[in-house]
Length: 398
Image 1 (cartoon, rainbow, N blue to C red):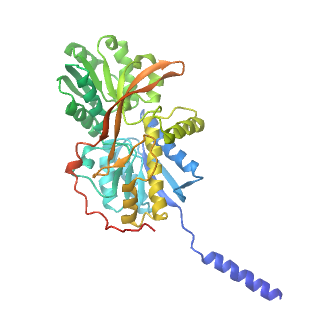
Image 2 (cartoon, helix red, strand yellow):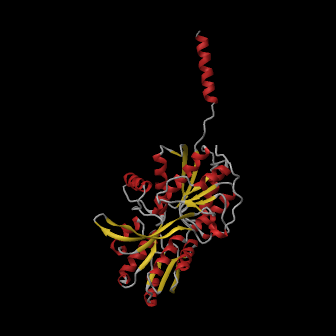
Image 3 (tube, rainbow, N blue to C red):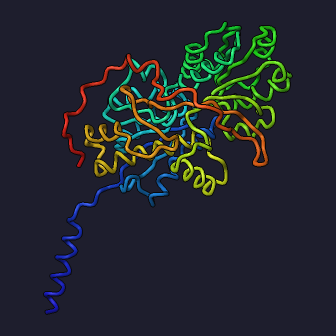
């Protein structure tokens, strides 16, 4: 009898050990955590991690392992991290990149190596048009979009001339292209600054001499903080109204800039006051977890995680089944914090875009949604994208 008990115990142990256990799905996050723009990657990471925490370490009911690396805003470093993720860690899903020059160095090779890249931020035009790829999805926007809405608004408001400036890198060029696509007035000056620049004395002197009716700028992170402060110090905010995209007026920038930003209008596809259940839950949870107001970047990190969760759930946690996982991503079966969300033909969002105003009240300085300018906006490059034929009808995920 004793022998039989030992035998049965050993048999039970063998059977338990022989049952395959599904490993965690690895997600490689390459983002910017250092330099003066480091908080952008931090917010993307924290929004993404919040979604995982809300599922108890899972996404879509599947165990996930989030691997986070800092690219230092350097394209070469981002490429090295991606290669390590693919070769050593066997990652099949990547995300996280903030800056478009890093994205251009990383994404094309990643997606050609049969790895999915889901962008929570950078959306360069080169990847939205002829350079689109079936394994590349952008859960934020195409770079031009938030500048296009301000071009439309400034044009409709009757400003006859505009002085425009942005950093000299892919997103900066997309920014000004987007603004000019919808602004029909004259361009009093078009200036490209150094990426990471902190002193704008020369640009402000030239701007003052140009005497434009309005100023539009795209300077994310610390660049925007410095520009806004120097713009106010020069007294220009009293005579020439300034406009920009949400990237230059996020919650952290407003906290650093203070009253100099009050009254400025900016374009965004998200704001903390958008009235939908997913957004209300997200804003409350983020503030409770991190003791700060979420930025646009945090909202995009959160939405990216929820998008990936929807695809993992649909495929039973099998990104290796690429056709099924791709189809599940394309479906975008999740509740976005921005409300309506769907992908266009080039795997970029088709979404509403708003104009926000920086206001000051008893709660502090923050953005208030002013009006919706674009409904179901499609980016300008979608028609240039040619994807492979869609998966056959009747495709099953599991």
